Length: 335
Image (cartoon, rainbow, N blue to C red; front, side):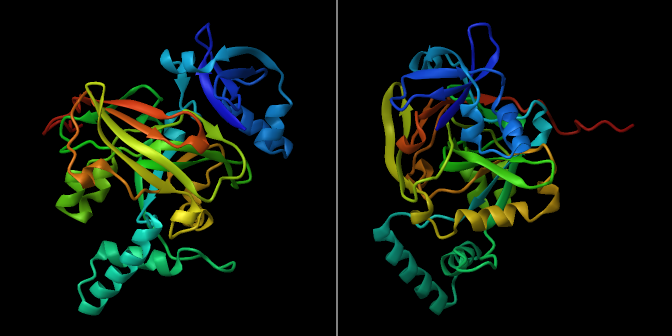
């Protein structure tokens, strides 16, 4: 099942089921948000798809038209953005199968020479222990915080880069969408396409600036895929400028292309009690091995990012813009 949130003809928020052809959306009756639908599913001990099937449909909509009119919202949100945490894990993907052996050999050469960087050492830990074979947790991944629900841009909306940023570039990723139940148990609703937009120039100055580089906007959607996720996911990431493709590259994700299992990444995020507060929403990015910045592309305001992952529905498109931070040196007022 593929779900979206969208604005109906009156401007109200609705939950809809996308048909297999990606052309029509059937609105669900009795719920105004994915959050409400998931809350009912948890309360009734049902899966999200089972709960959705109990709701009648209140009319059909043209899906491409909803997208064209920017009426499709991010697939999961909390009414209070402060109760939505946006996070991610890095150094999780192996890349293509042909690159895997090369990376392993490169790791061995660096290790033998005693020149393994901190990042490569963490990546090696993931390669060696990121997929647990039993009940014990595997290697701990790199983890970062991006912000609360206020940073999430809807499909088709602008991705705003602050004026103090040194770069603003895409990161095509798989995103897990979660709601914490009243018993503090995290419930995974499903997965969506994401653009984990970051400042790579800031990050490359020093890896200790990673935390700064991740405090940026991001985009998720348009669809929430409910149910089992294919192990091998293949998509395409593009940057368009003046309606022409400036850069394009395939990317791989899913557990067949990762050095950590999804379960291991989820454990290391939700093991912290503060990440299991009842009623909170979590949007968690699982990492990538493909980005235009690595190929020398420098983005500009007006560039369009397009992340296409067919197994998760329609592509995610957003336009880069620049905004003022609204803050200056000596902006703190003493009381």
